[in-house]
Length: 337
Image (cartoon, rainbow, N blue to C red; front, side):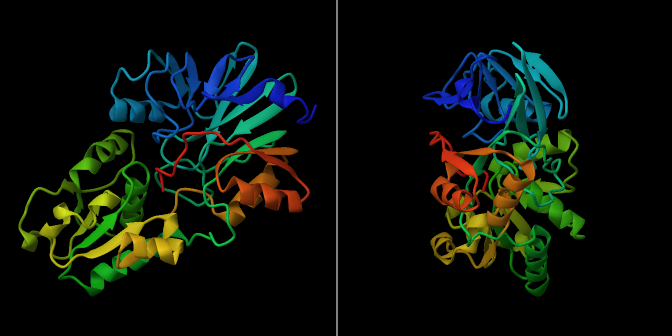
């Protein structure tokens, strides 16, 4: 049937993207009776919904961050599994963003729409890789939708971090990383690169790392930062929220090498703003070439853009002869990067 008429049954509202025949919203910005959630970052997963359908991992993340009663009920759905909701076939497939992150595949009356949530194409040992499925309409993010954004291989960036630790064993290395997804990915990449020493965590990162461990992601020897003696952390690798890199908490570390793991570290102005010595270009979102390649691979006749640099992406897709439009959905930020 193609993409014509999809917007009669799937459309944006003030509460979020609504599937009318299914009677549910996807990643709604406000509390609704029934929500399908793509992943656990707080700009996509909010409390107060009557019922939440998501992967088991996303549900556990929501409960950890917002409490076990953050929704009236939960409906776990495995990746690849399909279920019928009022005649709409709903399937979750991997998005490659963080643990449990899924794209939502909707099939109704011969039309297929994929709502990708946030996603990346680079490998990540903490989550299932992005899966390409053809569709009539592809709904995409545009966080890094500018040609300047071409992410480095995360393994190479972690290699730079470990080389710096080896060169400067008298200094602690203090890495700012977002608590859900980025922290665990950096830790796991360090482990895969052969770093087997204890890794120290700011208290705000401990609970989610423990959850990842319980969900089967082995992160090795992790220890909370409890000592105030600077000598205890000579040569140590320490992860913390980005805001803690240069606050009072960080003063316990001996002449620390400060770092920030983010796709924004591609931009010199962002590096200066962060004030870090070692910028690490490690992103959990698709970069510019990956966004364009993914859209082409889906074969979608129409592309809808949820948030980010939607203007640049819509313009580029027009040059490529593809239909595209911005949904201008509110409430989405860059928590995971």
